[in-house]
Image (cartoon, rainbow, N blue to C red; front, side, top):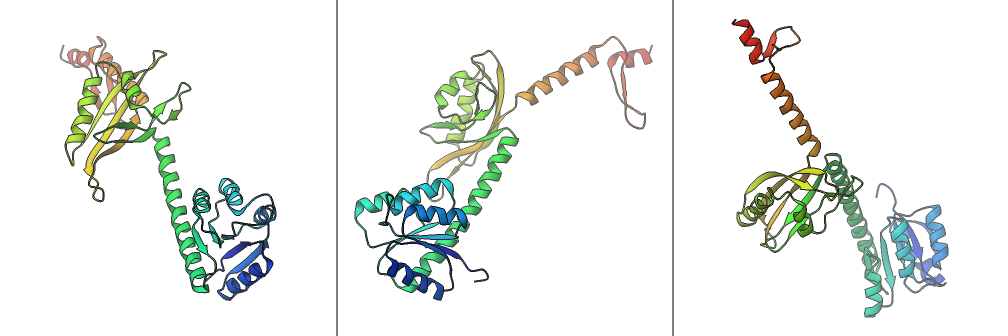
Length: 290
């Protein structure tokens, strides 16, 4: 290893903890500390966060290892491996809620210990990359005022909307969202989704308006593509829902300006940067020919 992994041992039996420290040092790991109870463990972690934690479930103090792990889950992103002699179902169920990266029953060999540490670190690094990618995607979608959506034949799910304060937030209830769609667009949207659900490999887009309780009108563009999930064999539709109100209003203003330009009784020309005529309205052409 180019840089030694830092490991914290949480074990209340001193002889076991010292033996574990010796074994880990022999395997090339750096031990940041040993704790016999949850409070000391939390203190050590705040002072020098390790790369990984080896946690015995039954430790001294008013918190067991699972309770300590639950606290760490909210405050730190550190993989935890349970090393314990207890394997009863209730304990395993409680341990599972803290999403550990491993679970070894005592006694275990150095080889088993080393393998589970290496696998846990590799999984943690992979999870970190996935979280980073998801965060980048989420920020990009928010910046573009977009949200993802998914549809199956059984249900419609839209994952972006606008709350009363104007911020984007998930739309959990497609049925209620559908009721807000302009009555002139409802059938078009319904047909659009049905077509996506029934045609594999089909992709399309549709724009529609939504009426809010305050009387405001928002515009959305729905992009979708249907495909069959190769692993599950299930037909799915996924896509992007984009709030396009500002773009729509800008287009309407441009259309109005174009109408004024075209229908004005005054001759109007627009020159480019070289002072050449870029375009002229009908009135200008009439004046030139009369």
